[in-house]
Amino acid sequence: MKTILAFGDSLTWGFEAGTFKRHGFAHRWPNALALGLGGKAHVIEEGMNGRTTVFPDPTCTAERNGAVALPILLESHHPLDLVIIMLGTNDVKYANRCRAFDASMGIERLVSLVKTHDYSADYAVPQVLIVSPPHIVATEDEWFNDLWGHAIAESQLFARHYKRVADNTGCHFFDAASVCKADPVDGGHLTASETHKLGEALVPVVKKILSI
Image (cartoon, rainbow, N blue to C red):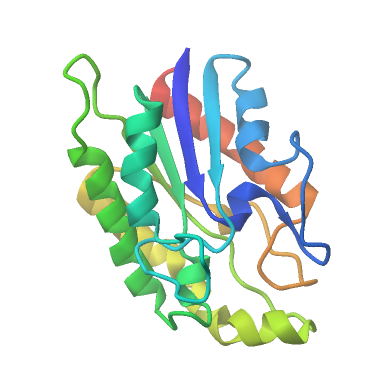
């Protein structure tokens, strides 16, 4: 059986817009992906609300910097066959005011961490699938509009920059915005059906990567 690490933020955790609760297990995209792979792979859910690619968030007591967390997870979960990285939405929100380009530089750093980690000699370096996040959309929720309403246009540039990183680093790429849309209730998170849709869309992609 193959092992996949799904490394992301609240979109991977399964944040439900409007309730601050978590989508049911079966709907979250890593688990929908696992179901579609028919038992041929174990998918590890590793989503954290607010996680960034490489940028610290001083507004939270938990460590949200993905570059800090990833090496720990690579060590604790190896051997891994594939690491799926979907981050960036929190890079362009209020705490950092970064661009999609800056987030892509963070993604490139995370790819480097995967490729250069000190794995046991008995195990191969896992492949990497970069997933660009769905676009932020307009919302009437005042708090969330203040959080990331300024970044709607910027979020539409994720795919272009992430695809370039994937090409330059020999990674695989998928654009989540090609199959799912953010919930206008808060402008950034996914409904249960949309996150499930993403997991289903990744099934043929992952099957091809892992030859399963």
